[in-house]
Image (cartoon, rainbow, N blue to C red; front, side, top):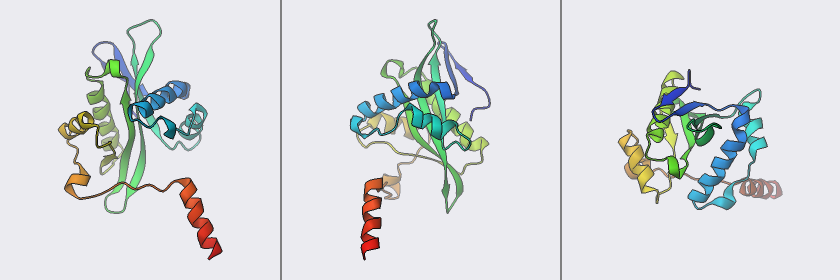
Length: 178
C-alpha cells in the first residue's frame, strides 16, 4: 500500500484503491481483457473484488489513478498486486495487472505506477517483483525492460504454466478412481 497518494502533473492522482472503487476496477479489468483479446476469460465481478480485496484478510492490493481534470473525478487506470513467496528468495510481489485507458497513455502514469509498485515492494521487504506480459505486446515489453525488468523466457527459459480449476477437479477425480 502507498504511504500517501502521489500527485502527478496534469492533475492526476495515484492512490490506494478503496472498496467503493471496485466497480471502476472491474470496468478497467474488462477493458484490459478486450485489449488482450481475451474478453471471455473474465470470471469475476465487482462483488468478488470487494470480498477478496477488502475483507478481513485481503488477497490483493490495488492502486488507482484518478483524472481530477473534471468535476467528477474518474478512475482511468489501475495496478493490482499481491504477495507471493519464492523458495529461493523469500517474499516477493506479483503485479497481476497494470492498465491505463488508451486516451491516458504516454502521460507518465505508467512510469509513476511502476515506481509506486517498486516502492511498495521495497517498503515491504520483497526480494523481487514478478509479472507477465503477452508476447505480442512489444510496447509493454520494451517499457518494462527500460525499467529494469528481465525477460525470463529469453534469459533463463522459464515458462508460465496454468492448470484451470476444471482440470484440477478432473485430475482429482481420476486419482480417486484409481
